[in-house]
Length: 153
Image (tube, rainbow, N blue to C red):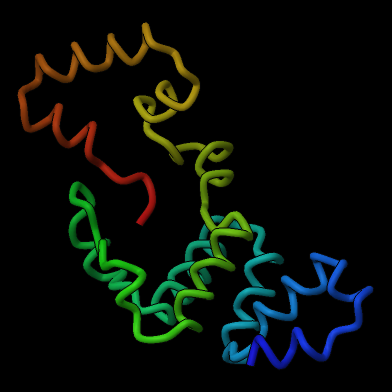
């Protein structure tokens, strides 16, 4: 399908990388997925963004329930190459290309990121070191959970 599309393009179209990338990403894409991707670009709240991202991840075959049940583990780490179809992998590519995360919501809204994560992101080594020392005084379990807790699911 991609080969036929590329063969049908004019030389000018082939030089337009945005045109080609957009059209190729739409080939074989479920119309419902395309609508979700458009909605993601329009989402304004953390809740809207999380809901759409989770729906797209489910469409791509990710076990989002496994991710939610184990906030300190690695979540669903199934290899992408084992996914049954190219269209499922394309959902994830498009999500990644669109900046498919909620980091911007977490950064700017109260209670979004933990103070430990925020210190790590900012590169504040003194604050990170202090938080690690304080956490270790509370016990290994507390320290492990502070370090392993996924900020997003």
